[in-house]
Length: 171
Image 1: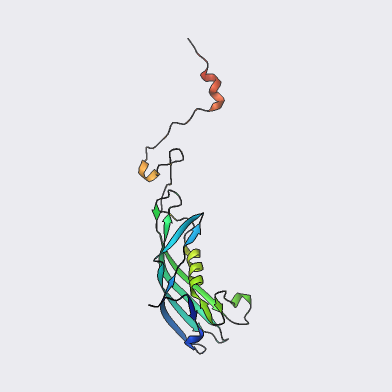
Image 2: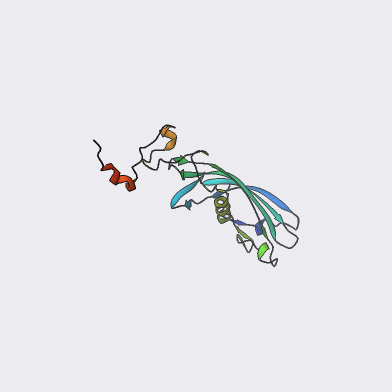
């Protein structure tokens, strides 16, 4: 499998209506979310790319790959690596207007690395968790609540508005 960052669409010499299915490998750059770094696993990710030539001289593109995003859980900071499935489509039709002008195609050169990175970023879950029901950290002692157990509690501090009553002594 060949690693491809920039793919030459014109080199395929497709006629209108023709298409190709390719298996390639692309480097996925890490994501920075909430100040934390999240890596794609594997970093060199196998991708399936389908390319079809349109009647207007453009391209219809379909990208599919599976990867995991690895980094700290957003609730408890334990290691997390949820699976992500990416299924992205792009159309590039010269002269077709802004909606049909792909930002990833420039003069029949497909920036596959950038497209895969952006599609991966959009497919990553809103919260990266170590497990779907992660309860996070105890707000008082910062112990992971999955380790603390259901009986984990702390004495609450007395309400300072009642402090003067503590000074009363009855005999």
